[in-house]
Each structure stands twice: as structure tokens, then as C-alpha cells.
Image (cartoon, rainbow, N blue to C red; front, side, top):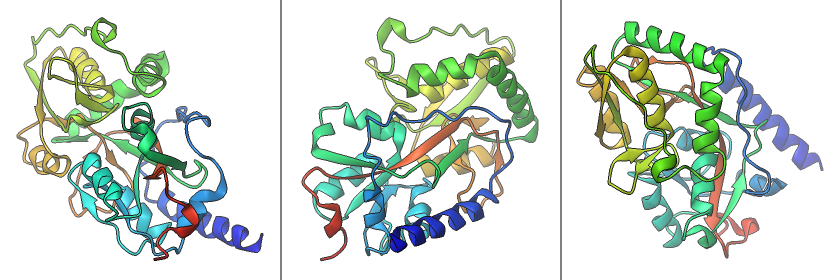
Length: 287
């Protein structure tokens, strides 16, 4: 009992420290993952000080979370989460940490039964992330637009469509008309992180990120051009001005060397530890 109390106290203090680094944002409801999807028991605590090797996607906050909250012995980063999952099944790492949205899509996929999913409680850690911009002027325009759609219910509808339940397919994906009268909004995204962005039936990038970017382009009276590339390669493309903004989002608490222009956070993700379905958490890292 005392050990559990100490765990909670340590994690709570770490969360307070991380929260101090957050960029302030307007008060909006955080979408909470369904408890039926992920394990909510204390089993996440089995990873604390267990000398675990916890992998994640390059550029994500989760390597930092693995170091700070779980004090992992190794936090390798992979080009994609799928690469990390392959390393997990090969026994090269003990767990993969990803967002609740990604874990939920994996759970419902053909590979879902290969893994177990252990949620980090939302009162311990919530990842807040937002897009980055080439200019402060565009960021300010986005922030005002985002505040408006947060108040009028548009953001809630986009969240419900892509992040709650099964994502839309085919004709159920909204067709957002773009005028292009004010030019083209150039954005970049990975296209490999469902349900935020992934390749649709026709090979085009779809998902939460793309609908948000399309709605913003519509607001600006612009067309939309999406460039697909690796997550960390997007940052220099934006800071150089080659694209106007990232459609994908970056954690506001990540320790980055770049002086980035962040928009208000639009994605709020619970962290989930993914382990092989036959793995016993009590044996994590104790080889």
C-alpha cells in the first residue's frame, strides 16, 4: 500500500513539473478513452523502475515520458509505430508507448489480438499537442479560428468522427469544398498514424489531421496541398517556410531544441503501453 502511495506521489510531482511547461490554452473538454478498451488497473505501475525498454515513434513525447515517469533503462525511437511493434514482437524491447487513439485503432485491427493494452491514467499524464507554423501571423489566425470552432461545436464533431468509435470511410468522410481564391495552404503530415492521419482506400491521406487542415483552409479561402513525410522531417520543412504548417501535431511538453511556433493544442491523448498478449507485466525488464 505504501509503495502504491509513493508511486502516485512521485508521478503526481512529475506531472506538476510537466504541466508548468505547457502552453496555455482555452478550456475545452478532453476526450476520454473508453474504459472498456484498455486495462485501467494498477498494472502500469509494474513498469516503474523495472529497467524496461520502452519504444516509441521518433519525435513523439513518449520517449520522454518513459524516461521521466517510468525511468526506463532504454527508450529507443522508431521511424513508425509499426516498426516499434515489430521490435516488440521480436523481443528487442519490452513495451511500446503510443497514444490512446493509435492503440484503439490497433486494438480493432487484424493485429489487435497480438497485444495487450495498459492505459496510463489520465490524472497521471495527458499529452497535449498542437500544429506548428512557419509564421506567427498564420498561427494567430489559426488560434482564433480554433477558438471559434471549439465554441460552436465543430471541433467536437471532428473529434467524435475520428477519435471516438470507428473512423469514417468512403462517402461518410466529409467532402470539404475549398475555393482556392486566396492561394494554397501547404501542410505536411506523416500519413502513418491512424486515426490522426493514414492512407485511405485511394492512397490519399485522411484522418483527423486532414479534416482539421481542410476546415482551416476553407476558413482561409484557400486550397490545400498535403505533403507526406516522416514525423521529424516535417519540423525543418515548416521552420524553413517550405510549407505553411504541420497538419500533424507535436507535443507541447516535449523538450525540443527548435524555437517552434505552436498553435493551440487540438489533440489530447492518454498514453497507452502496448505489450505482447502473452507477456506477464510482473516480469517486465527483469531478465
